[in-house]
Length: 92
Image: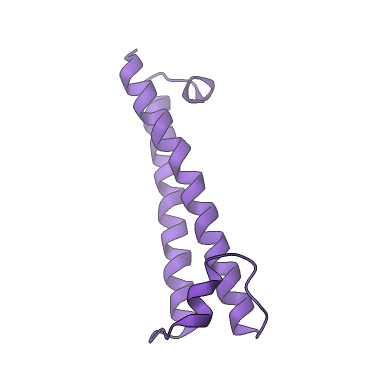
C-alpha cells in the first residue's frame, strides 16, 4: 500500500466535510434571510449588505447541489480507497 496515496486521500477527506459545513451555514443564512430573521453567522453580512440577482430559492438549490456533489466526492474517495485495500481508520 502506498503511504503517499493514503496521506493524499486523507487530506482530501479532511477538507470536504469543512466545505459541507460552510454550505450548511450558507443554507441556514439564506433560510433565515428569506424568513426575515437575522443572520446567524458572518456570511450573512453579504446577504444584508449587497443585492443578489438570483432568487433565494435558486441560490439554495445551487448550494444543495454543491453539497450533494461534495458528499458524492467523499463517497467516491472512500470507495476508491477501499478497493485499493485502505481501511477507513488509516485515512484519519
